Length: 87
Image (cartoon, rainbow, N blue to C red; front, top):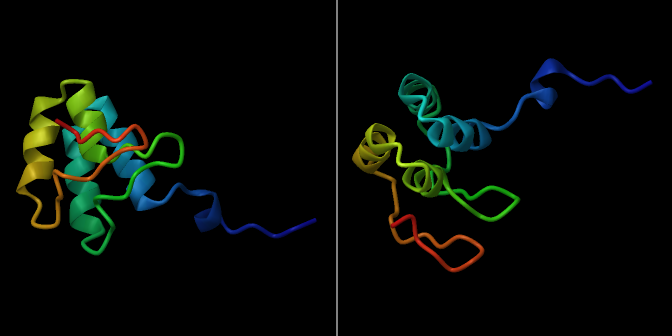
């Protein structure tokens, strides 16, 4: 039987950010950004390459979009797997 630490079972901060952004969970987005200042905020998911900004924009999570746009590392020109930006 393999020993898996609890940390290995947790999604990455980037994956958590994508989910929180898509759900419109502004408090969680802020928490993740604050607690993970070195995360790759522009990283797309493994399914379709959508970033947190893509997901927030797609689902009309305007407050989350505004919060992500305040982040100094955000890149609005990142393309998903379909070749689309978040806007």
